Length: 373
Image (tube, rainbow, N blue to C red; front, side, top):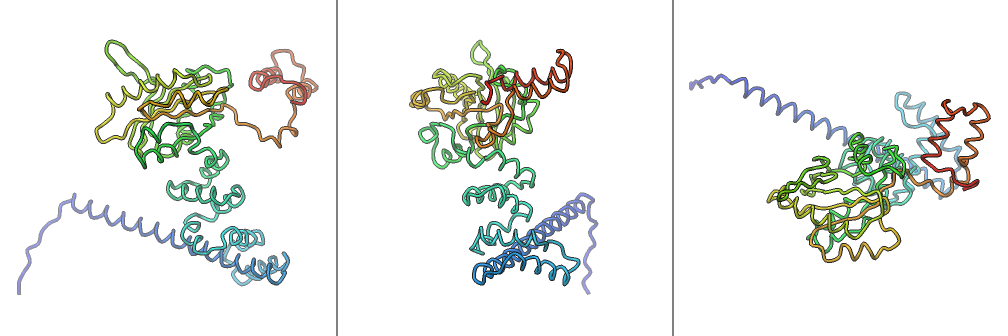
């Protein structure tokens, strides 16, 4: 009988083995949870498709849904998710996605709450698919998904004016273009249109998390007023980021005025310096973004002429410090004068009261305007 020598294991080897096992258990649990979620979503689609088919082909009314809900919950008292409203949602899912294969391949990767939000808030199929892919890729929670849909990321992506097609190779040019938005919504800063550039910059730093969400996935903050020593002089970049997916630096120049032709030359200068002083040999060419209070001013051709012929990739986008109000809501809202009268009717505006301060803040932020505007 051959005896095998016993070997004592080191503590480090044991810890490494334990970590590997724990990682495998966690990954298996995640896969199992995702698979279970997908099965539930497909079951919901099947139920919704059955209801939809019967209602279309046999004219069944909504009372059938209520009866189904009662009978299902009676049969499965410990199972949630079969209220009349949820059965209607299942029907809506089947109506929005007639092809079960699409549900299995794409939609079922999201939890039910995410799907309901998209069915309610995003009506355009291509936009809904884009949000689904983004949520799956980046692991968005329902709240984060709601933030992106509320701000209309799909409608703003890739809308900045750029010269990327002439200055970046494919597919880098397409990827970089899709990273940029227009406009950028900075209403979380709580600033007015008369704020100075440095005040906007400082506010962005104080709300860096919200700004990174607005910029989009993949941006890492490097610094503000980032110093570049060129010859005997120092130059300062407003905001410097690095994009982890594109593998390149992003230089952002803030302007509180409309875009001017010289802004392109200044950004070109910054990008040359960053590529020479900071860029690693494995990095892609640095990208510049000029963020202006008004992107185009009165002449769109100004942008085309300013960017044409430059060798560095530069984009120009607008930012909004207050979110534009939908036109259909404007007639329903009071004017500043009406707000003033309402406040004055209950609290005398002596210049020191909370009401007085509120009126002044309203005037400062929104302007007095004319009655009915």
